[in-house]
Image (tube, rainbow, N blue to C red):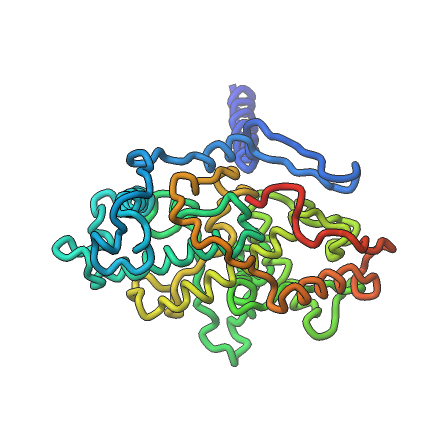
Length: 385
């Protein structure tokens, strides 16, 4: 009797242990794609079910009307961004934005005073106006990252008034001058860096202000200005964020022979290069200036607005919404035609200098390969999003 009870307890314990062990696994079909030589880890494994969930797009409220008839500025008052669009298309975009962003119980009133739709007294209208400028800027200026797929409000919001994935400056250490309880911004499990002991706030350094993540030492322990172990840890934490945001591993962009060398990297690295600079531009030019507009409950613990990072758009996929473009439904969001594509801080010369430096075997721990003279510097193989 005792033996039978003991056997039952062992069986229950075994089943429970197996269930707990499997709870950490991602079940379901996977798709594996080899992207480089065998044995180098150059492969991507994708959870097919996750792609299906993240790529779902809602139907439009009604079909897109032609861009004919009176302009929006002729029909409505105080239309500052979309005044040259027909009133019919203006109304269509407003209906889309209501569906994509506004809480169902609020509708148009989420941004407007129903007694005076032209009024700017509701702060969300001021925010929405700036977000329209931002979206048009992304689609017209940052084709180096979004190419012709572009973005709409739905890319980030997905039916939420506030995008699900944002960031603000962390609370920080109570007394930065003391060593007591001062972890120097790391050694605290945080989802942003895969619960590693790395610096858990890589966004302040790399997603606003224009500071580049360019650690590439030629020794096992990087040293020198801008290439210290401390800088390396911060860069690695940031790379953990990129990896999680896009649902990929390091070899989606890099070659394990040399993570720094541009001439060995995949074209996706150049797409990411411009994406990081695009996010900097979004936060610096469009979101941080809204600090006086946002109320306290829409700001972080340090009083700055919640900003975007790679997860805000990508949400676990290497191409947001599975690479589907919604611009044909909302052509107004394409922005002005003929805008020059954004470049690095130093322009074309700065980008070329960066690639040359990272291809230099004296500067990085790379092999003997040299960059071909005619190698294009921008992504050419795969659409960016």
